[in-house]
Every structure is written in structure tokens, then in C-alpha cells.
Length: 345
Ligand SMILES: [Fe+2]
Ligand SMILES: [Fe+2]
Image (cartoon, rainbow, N blue to C red; front, side, top):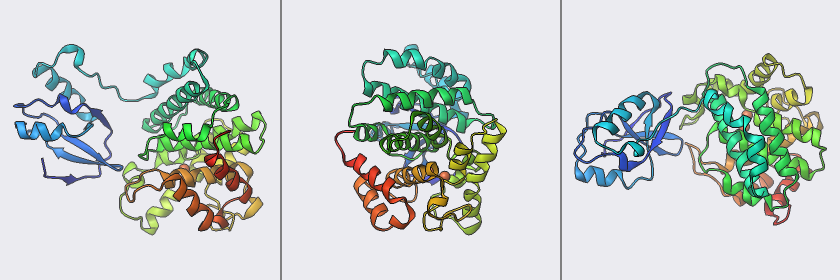
């Protein structure tokens, strides 16, 4: 139990209920817990589950197994007499499983009883779609599903009378994943875009670009993206390619709108010229990229990462205002701060 083996593996994981681990059984799969972005093995396959071990395991809210061990886990559940209805079917999140759900979004959106429920629905659906996209090996993007999500994202935010930012923050998990980060940046960008008066057609383009701003990371190894130690120069350069790779992937999928492509390409540019890939300055950086850039940094700072704990919203804004002020468009960042502080939107 206490033998903690750190591994960075390019596995996909799924959570299981710790009560599924049966006292007196011999485990037929490895069990992990999550520490920040890292999965840490806590019981190896072949271990006898003593009562002491079963007790300790159940002190965790969640355990994780790799999807490669899905079959072994199902057999284990059956062998150990867990009731059939309690046996969890583990489904990998793929486009095949997610797309039919996205297609039902219009009816579900209409049926949601209030603005917050609509936002919640679109948030979870967008995150699920992005998770499936990042899980898929190929770069063929389901753009009609993306368009459906962003259409309802803009609708939900357009008509919201809520103090939307605090509600949005409540929906967002602490832990960093690329699919939640993409979704968060899209929601923040649309709220900010609305508040600076962008017309609906631009809000849709902005949402599109923001949801897919890090799509280039699909080509970068997860192990590098989630690397707990700091990056060397070569690794940093490789990660920086994601802006240009993102544009390449979008173009390959038939996206031609210059505002969307430019927003993806320039979302890491900084007003002081210290960004990448071109080192653009000030107003040379397109409007959408300046909006997404603020939301991107705020989300990255407030999410829990492998290499550090997260900042609170207040700490992140303070850091952005005091130490990074030269990087951001002042009007947009002040508006963003007001939105996060406001009770009314
Ligand atoms: Fe990025
Ligand atoms: Fe990002």
C-alpha cells in the first residue's frame, strides 16, 4: 500500500469506487490515486487485499485504473460476487460515444429549466466533446459538433441574467486537463467578449477559436504536457509549436475564417512583444487573441498543475495586474477583473 511508484505513462485512466475493492481478494489490476495531474500507483496487481488495506483504500474518494485493465476489472467484479447492477460499465470517452449526446443538445437545452442549468449543460457537453477530441488519435475534427456546442454556449451566455462568473467558476474542476482548460477559456472569452460589446457573429467566432485554441497540443505527448518538473529548452520549444500546429489542423479540417485562425496562431503573443510565435506587439495582436490570451493565463494560473498548487482567482488577478500588466490589453483585463468581481453581469 505504501509503496508509491511514480510513473509517467501515456495511459488513459478511469475512476472506480474504492468500495469495489473486496477484502480477501487478490487484485488483478493496478490501482492508482491522483496527485495533481499525476497518477500514482498505490496497489499493484497480485496484491492480497487485507482488511487493513481495504480500510485504507476506502479512505480515498476515488481510485483509478487504466483503460487497459478494463476487462480485468470487470472480471474481478464478477468473480467477487458484486451484484450485477453495481457493476460499472467503463466506457472510454470517444467521439463515437459523445457525438450522439452532442446531437441531442438542442432538445436538452430547451428542456433545461433555467439559465444556470443551460450553462451547466453546455459546459459539461463542451468539456466532454473536447475530451473525446483529445482522446482520439486522428486529427479529423467533428466540426459540426463543435459548432453546436459553441452556438449554445453563446446562447446561454447571451441570455444569462446571472452573476455568471461566480457560477461558471463553480462548474470548473480544480484539476487541470486540456479539455477542461479549453472549455473554460471558451466560456471566459465569450463572457468577456459580450461584456466589451462584440456582436453575436463575433462571439461565435471567438468561442470557436477559444474552444480550439490549444488543439495543436493533440500532437504533443501527454507525458510532456503534464510533466511535473520544469521543461528544458527543447521541450519548451516543442510545446510552443502548438499554436502553429493548431492552425495547420484547423486548415486541414476546412476552417478558413481568418479571425479564428489568427486567434489560435497568436493566443500566446504578449503586448510587450515577449510572446510567441512572432513576438507581435500591442495592437498588432488580433483582438480575439488578446481576449483569449487573458482568459488562457487566468485559467492556467487558477488550475491545479503538477508542478505547483493553484492560485485563487484573487491571487491570479493580482499577479496578472501587478506583474504581468505589460503583457495584456489593459481595457480587456480590467473588464475581466470587473466581471470576476461583479455580482451582476
Ligand atoms: Fe496555448
Ligand atoms: Fe491554453
